[in-house]
Amino acid sequence: SSGINAEWPLRPGIPSLCWVERGVACEQPHVVQLDAEELNELIEKTQQNLDIIDNNNESDDEPVNDVDKVNEIAKEDEEDEFNMADYDNEDDINGEKIFGAGLTGVTYFANPEDDPYITLPQIAKDDDDTYAIKPTDSLICCAKLDGDMSNIEIHLWNADDETFYVHHDILLDKFPLSVEWLSFDAGDQEEIEGDRSPGNYIALGCMSPQIEIWDLDIVNTSEPVTLLGERIKTSKKKPKIGKKGHCDAVMGMSWNKLTPNVLASGSVDCSILLWDLETATAKECLTHHKDKVQTVCWHLAESTTLLSGGYDSTCQVVDCRTKNSKLWNVEGEVEQVLWDVTNPYSFLAGTSTGNVVCFDIRQEKPIYTIAAHDSEVSGVAMTKLVPGLLATCSADRVVKIWNIANNKPNCVTTREFSDAGSLHCLSFCPDSPTMLAIGALSGGLLMWDISTNKDFRDAFNNTFQGS
Image (cartoon, rainbow, N blue to C red):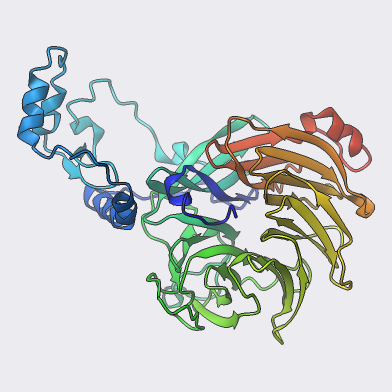
């Protein structure tokens, strides 16, 4: 399955992403100035989580630890005209040393003007202007793995002026698996006076059992606003309600837009927890799956109806008030589930066998099955702005666009991203319905405006007006 395996910690890529609608982000984000001590602390935390990888990838070659010997050899190099061997040994450098996470020995200066190796004049920048966000800007939050480093990248995209760049990022000390946007302020209740105002946050599910809530309106933040559950994995896989939470990695999450203080999370521990974000506690533990729960999705109109899929080859719909559930079996593991935005009774599931299966919750058998890809269907996406439009992606490096109107699925067009590695996730922009953001294992964040495709325009000419 593409969800979690032994290769993930060692391979770069984007396992999950989500959009932030226009007008949600603060136009002038708060910028935190990190000092060297705070940066070192974060990097040390990251290094601790990477120790297991270092142990598994030890080389047979004995590393050279004798600094004096290294410097002596370097000095004998006639081409060392910049004296790089003594870069960090010069007496007149008073910066702070950064250690760990591949940055050992790097000297950090809080003020770049103090760095003797920066000789170009510094261009003064106003942080307010640097990080300003327009009302017409959309954001894309990507959980990113890059070798032994992990972070959340927040990209800014503007359709009007075709702006696209990394606005800021959040350094992580653990490997991310899933991200979910939410507006509910999950900060400490004791620090909040009166009603909670909607904000701009993401929930982060990781290889650890703990869920982190980050404020996207703070640049250079080093700490989440709140934590859900305990960080340490336990040998006894018994998730619990209350503060304890999951006991293994969190693979998928879904925020309940109809009940904003509720977040659902699926885990390797085979459970689904329903979190009360106001108290940072798990209120319900659902155990109707018999294997890892990879994907969860709240119903678009029924606030207590939750759809889920897992490694047990089942899709299940549960009424969270009674915990009564109904299941449908599929061939292979369930990679992702999604409610049909045009029909409140139907949902779709992408499977590890390359199929997309559509079910009606009032029926036992599937409405239709699409042999969509040659490998697992790692991502499925729809948009309510274009009825019948479905996008799928796969480890076969292909994105396919479908017209599923009237339950008669038809492949409209395909695009292969041959240089991107396998594709893991995709999502339509909530403001520009033809813009797809795609997460690749070795290609980073990919963007595709499907309105530029003639086959798409011809297929949806009655329901879509291109720009």
